[in-house]
Length: 297
Image 1 (tube, rainbow, N blue to C red):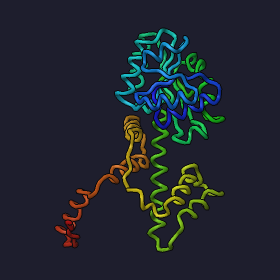
Image 2: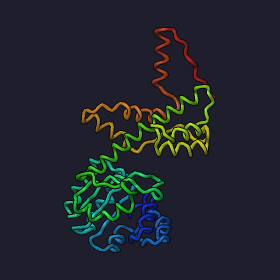
Image 3: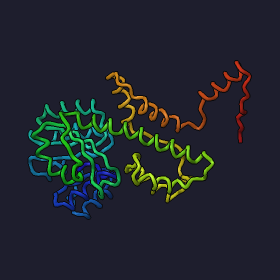
Image 4: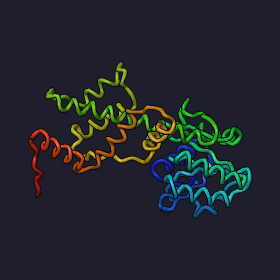
């Protein structure tokens, strides 16, 4: 396992608990030491990690998407031997993943793209794994996937690239679901009925058509901070929503909900909307509508 962040470290723990032998590496020495304390074999770098694995080697890469993943996998392709397998479990853009697959193939190394969902709960609940790659390579790695996933939570979904593509769309759907919950709870707070949001979220978990794991987590969030006063209304993204919208455009698929949920995230990052200022100014110009003056501290 290369990469021992929030997900990689928990995956190592889950594998070790179920009898797998794991060689672990991360740039942070403390993370490697923590993995070793649980029974993993510590390594000091990519070369050292490869040397401690028995052919056919299987290396799971769980580092940030983009250049960090590209650099690690390109170096692994040089270090590994024909028949060895690399699993990319990060949120790599499927197009980039296909390029990586071809580069690995030139060295005789198989690359599997494993779309991985589960977050910090994966250790306890298991990870949903959407796996793309060649049939023989996937079968070789199946004991790993079956250990990491809950029952029914792993599938070989198609050819190389299919795993990352399905995870991308999965995250696009997640954007829409999160936005709908967020808007719904905001409407409740503005209604004047003084709702207990934790109570409503808990109520909707039982028999409602909108019940989901996200709603389970909403109950936890409202229990900890009923009005979410300690949380800023700033919503980040890691790219998958953007890629899903782009794929929808490329494929001529109308996806207004996912698209608007992505734009809502962008809007959440503005302290002040300049476009809103323009609209207010124009309404004042053509209709004499009043404007609110900006106050400065």
